[in-house]
Length: 480
Image (cartoon, rainbow, N blue to C red; front, side, top):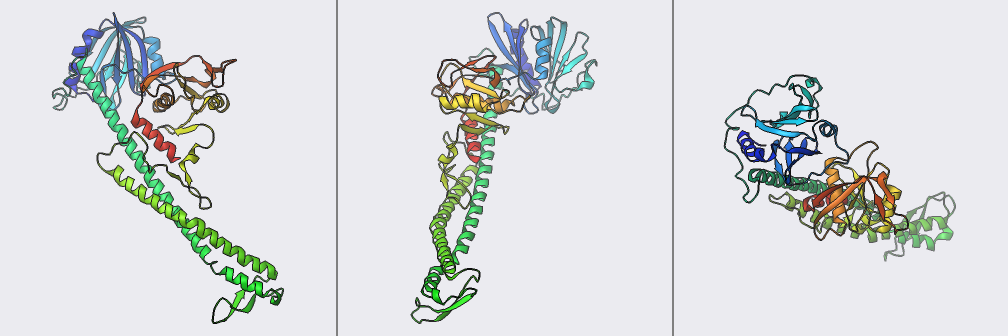
């Protein structure tokens, strides 16, 4: 998060450019992050204010916000009461991490207070009398009270020199440096998340394979008891006439042993001689089938466990980075019950649609072709589900399953938009616009081919393919 010196430097560079500008649009891309589009003659600047505990900051950003389908309540309030206001002044209060934006809007004078104080960070809206009207942390007890700044926390750490030296060649060099720093940190955190996700998957896969190996070995051990039953069947076949109904065993000469010993063969007294003979032959066939099927399964599973363990060591190594393509060991076999063989990963593609799980655990469906797009949008999707598609180019329909009356979390929206970009003609360029709306605002285009639609009330997001996010999506896709 920014210290006092960082804020001083940021305000020195952005205040001259933003003061006198108009708040044209307000966005809330994250739970505790706001972006103000500030219009000045000839330019629109994006002012980012973050109250995230470990990333409190205020600076100009060039990154377009990725907004949820519907603005959160605090954003709605700001749009109703603050949007359109003029920024008269931007001040840092009491040499602390508190910034005030003095405004003049349709309701008169007002102030937005940005308390960028780490875990206690908050954003408050004050009226002309400096009474609290609303705050980001939803502390209802504050409403109506006169605003009092927190106790000044000046300390050696806060008074150190700025952490950012600025990016040359930009209008706001300090803001650009801060923006780049947090982009790098977000990328690093994404790598950590991908690493943790991969480790969990590998450990789970190893554990599952070992359970199967144990089950198959037990099945094979049981079947091995039937190894000599073909001989019993042949001996019974040669002595069928000597078996009487109700016999529970028979003494016969073992012609398969050169010493010709007498042996006792157990019988099921409830079955006929033919039935007992058939049972012995059937159980021997069961042994042969188990030997034929289970032995190679166990061998392949052992090899798979060794590969997974090798990859686990590699992922746990310091400095590991997710690759652009899934690991060759990943998803190579799908583990099934012991009664079925190991199937190739192509079995994950059976059934309609590509299926993924978002960072927040929500299901995402992606059509593979025009027919599937049509079936996904107008068959599977519900009216309140989120619908996405790359703007202006052929591509997959993407649907996020949502409960009625709920909005997709920020990370889920980003995941789904990334998939819509990936599975479209924008993939080669690696960037572009994705539109999103509720499924109920998507209609079939009459007289057109399957998958052609008419979309209303859509919103747009511009994004670039993020290999770390896609890797995490692929991990969760194969983990299912």
